[in-house]
Amino acid sequence: MVDQLSKKTFLIIDQGGHASRAVVMDESGRPLAGAERALETSRTEGGFVEHDPRELVRSLREALAEIAQKSGGSFEKIKAAGLATQRSSIVCWDKHTGEALSPVISWQDTRARERIIQLAHRAGEVHERTGLFLSAHYGASKLAWCVDNIPEVKKALDAHRLCFGPMSSFLVWQLTAEKLFVSDPVSASRTLLWNLHRKEWDSQLLEMFNLTSSALPVCVPTVHDFGNIKAGGRQIPLALVTGDQSAAMYAYGKLQPETAYMNIGTGAFVSRSLGQEPLLASGLLTSVIHQQDDVSEYVLEGTINGAGSAVQWLRTIHSTEDLWEQMPGWLRTVEDPPLFLNGISGLGAPFWVPDFVSGFVGNGQPHEKFVAVVESVIFLLHRNVVEMGFSLRGPERIQVTGGLAAQDGICQRIADLTRVPVYRPAQAEATVRGTCYLLAGRPDHWPEPAPGQWFEPGDGTPITQRYSRWLEEMEKRINSK
Image (cartoon, rainbow, N blue to C red; front, side, top):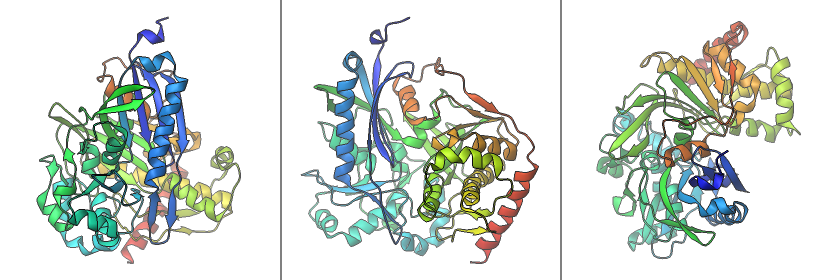
C-alpha cells in the first residue's frame, strides 16, 4: 500500500448554508481528516435569509485551525487549497478595514423581489446576456438593496471605500494574506451582472440595477493565484475558487453529456453538460461551471429553491423528532400522499414565479405531508429533465448526490418517474470531492472509493399519475395569478 504521506494532499474549504468545513484529501480524492463548524441562518419575514459575516469567517478559521491540528503529517504535504461556496450569496465590506458592512445575504433571500418585478419587461435581455432569469435569488437586486437601505454601505460607496459582490470574494479577502479583490466566474455569473459571452461585468446590466463596477471585484478564472491562506503555521496557496453546486458535478471525474446530474440538498439542482459552448433554452439556466486557460465549460441547469429547506419549513409546523430516521419507513408505506405545490423560497425553473403561494392539495397526516413535500422536489426535478429534453437528447443515466439522496425511497421514485436508471455514489457528499478533482488537475483516472448503488426504474404508474395531477394543479395555480 502506498504511504499516504508520500502523496500530494489538498486542503478543501467548503462554505455551505449550514456549516463551514475543512477537509484534507489526497490526490485520489480520499479524505484524510476533516473539521466542521455549524453556521446559524437567520430567517425573518419579508424573505430575509442571512448569515452573520463575522460568525461565518470565524467558523472557517476555527475549522482550519482544527484541521491543522488533526491532520498531522498530511497537512505538511498540502500542495494547494480550494474554496467552494454558496454561489449567489453576497456581502458588502470596507476595502480599507475589511469590516463587513452588511450581513451575508443568502442565495435563498428574496427581500428585493419588488425590484425584480419592476424589471420584468427586460427578462429576455437578461437571459440573453447572463444565461439566468430575473430572480431575487441572484446577487444584483440584493446589492442594490444594500446600497439603498444600509447607510454604512452608501457612505462607503460615496467615499470610494466599498467592496461588494459574491460571498466568495469576501472570503478570499478575509482568508488570504494578499487581500486580492477578485471573483471566480461561477460566483460572478450568479449576480445577474456578468455577461456569459464576454465573461466580464456588463455595463448595461449594471445600469439596469443602478450599480457601479468600481465596487465590484476583478473577474478571474476558476483556477488562479488567489493568494495564500495562513493555517497551521503555513502559507497555503489558494489555487481554485468555485461554487458548491459546480464543484459537485465533478465529484466523480469528467462530465458525461449523457448523464443528468442531480444534487439534492437545501436546494435541488439538475444539470446537463454542454461542453465548451453555451446554449440558451426556455425556462432553464445556462451556467458556467469552470474556467481555466481561457477554456470555459457550461451546463444547462434547472434549480429548485425548496428541497431540504422545504422539509425544514414543514418541520417548523409539525415538530417531528428523528425525522430522517423515520423518513425511509414513510417513503415505503405511504402510497397516496396529498400533493404539495412547492414554491418555498420562490418557484424556480422552469416556471419562475417568485411569489408563488405554496400549499397542499388534499388532506393527510403529518408524515404523509412530509412525503408529499419530498415528492414535490422529485416532481420539480422531473419537470426540469423534461424541459431539457426539448434542447438535448434524453439522459441515459441520472447521478444523484447531496443529503437527500441518502434516502433510497427518493432515488427509487426518481428512477420510477423519469424511467431512467439512477446511480448514487457511495460517497453522496460531492462538493468536497469535486473540488479536490479540480485541484488535482482533473486526472483521467479518478476512482470511486467504493461502488455506489443503482436504482432501476420499476412500476412508475402510481407516481406518474400523482405527477400528472400535481402538474395540472401547479399550472392551474400559476395561471390563476
